[in-house]
Length: 139
Image (cartoon, rainbow, N blue to C red; front, side):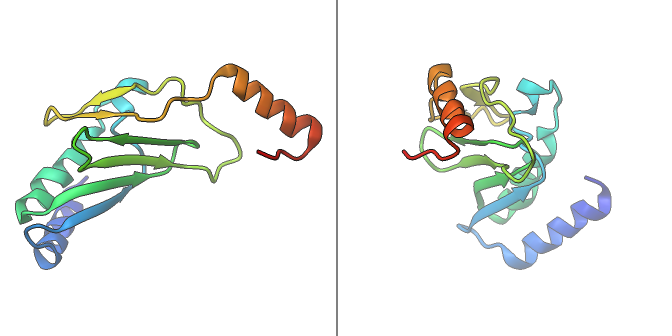
């Protein structure tokens, strides 16, 4: 994030956020899993938005929503106050989910957990075969 972008977000937050507001933030990538699957520290920008811009107004980031990776995953804080969701299905292929960490540890030491258990390889094979060979899958 460059200086003009930072100033823009600061101005929007100052003009529109009040103490106690809950914020939904849409981002281009799921940076909260990047340290685990890409070995990068892209999360620092999201951390800045959450604490330096949203938090300074007394508001709370409740939901971060992104696409980019072509799968669905949801991480939830143990107290249920924050969620981070990846819902990227618009591409021509699906990204794997077996490489996602079960827990993610974020700068403020909050742990978010992936509450969904991925389907077994047996289930995935059965679904794939039903789609390929029958053309229609009825569940």
